[in-house]
Image (cartoon, rainbow, N blue to C red; front, side, top):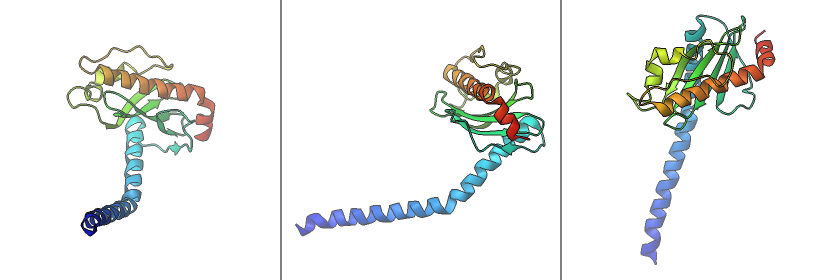
Length: 177
């Protein structure tokens, strides 16, 4: 009987120690991870609109996939959306919306799509430009060959950003003033 308990006790001790180390590592790094996320977001906003002040809204209007919304004093809005492409939550973009409510730019915060295939949505400037100027969801889309799921994910992300913006335009713009 004693021989059967010893391996279980050793395994339990190893699991407890590993769990404690994971908790310690999480606590040690969570502030740095949050700062890096904030820095990537602000760098993406700057890439969209140039050097400008922006106000980060404290709401995402409970829209699925929307991570953050920022607005500049001159009425430009950046909506961070995470969408599924070929990879679950593989597309993390910032959609820039100008003061007239039209898409003015798209910046990638991160991309978890297949290199060489799904990454075409980031690398092909002409593909991204087809969204510019649109001011309503359900944008027509010319998919990229070999990156159909990623193309559809980009379309879904842009549609989500436009939907959130159009449904909450006044609240978003008033928060920036």
